[in-house]
Length: 536
Image (cartoon, rainbow, N blue to C red):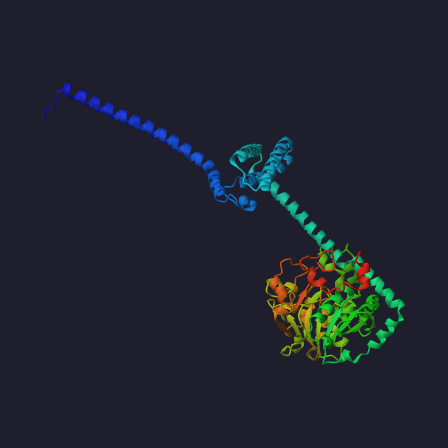
């Protein structure tokens, strides 16, 4: 092939090469400029995105108040960034102090206070934190955190330090919880001054007014007390005002109050007080009987293992000597569990040998509906009619009893449903036939070392009435008003009986104020003694 002349080829190659390199240079410069501009815009978008989003949001809801909780939870919130950095900075303060770096700890503390002040101002004005406000704090706090990280506070050291502090805080929290429980129980066990005043005045009436004692003698053998055509209720208590509310609320909501008979058993200290009150007050024609537990001579240690255990030296030490066995929870030492009145519910057929059916009421309940339909309920041959409480897992048998004991595991279902004492209808004919009291005695003897259950009358009741309890409609008995602040109002309104079980009794200052009017409406505020004692 014939080659082209050299003078023809060189000019063409030179012009083409220059043109290509010129284009490549221009494209390179333009690409670099676009890259820089694009990167700059991306950076600005990342930084300003929360602000723009927040500004647009604020424009849409100009008149709405800021929700600080939502603000703290928002991913794009400056408040959340500040709060998270503050939490981290607090951890490094602890570590800095342990390493004697007091200057760094002081710097962190100062900046934390500044951040907390900013959060407080935002909350007060109901406006989100702006970028201009947040940036200086975030930058300076981030710088200090990096400084702390560089000052040999490695991850392993941080984790070990924080773990030890968490353990220390848990110990303090547990100690505070135990102390709070102890104080709560002391408050629950103490008698308010106004109630003590009332009892003193009533005792003076009983001792000085012979007419009251004569009237009590006349009423003692009333045929109404053993008439099975009437509706009988029993209450075992030493709390005068509480018992009065139970009776007032029951007769106030009864269709035929004159057909009601109330049987009260109290101790010798409160016997005269109770008589003075109930003989001097009208309960719409219903009958009220007051008995002294000390007159039950048959209830002694030779007949009842419960009495024998309650009166033993070991039991007294267990419940009253706080220095013994410090590992036991304070609630297990509550002296109310050694009080014989709490155990009388297992001796109802012996106390009322001529009665066939009776409703047991605790002294911390309020009756809101007529209870006489309870007496016509079909218990299907069972002894005890009660409301079950196993809507939650912690009210099943395995939560009350020690199923590692073969005596328990071989006889009872751990998933069996628990039920409540406080409003129970007892078929006393079926009780005597099944000899439930003897079953109760058996389990009390088996639990002499407290290894089957720790406290209370419910666990032995679950054992003694096992297989002999008829579940009632839940509306007959609603519990929790002495410890649960969130009992459903609709449930309370539909309840025949509401129960203030727990330490927060309505007659104490330690109470749930939301429920107090439900109890207080049945207090006889017009009684002269109550008016005199109101200021105590």
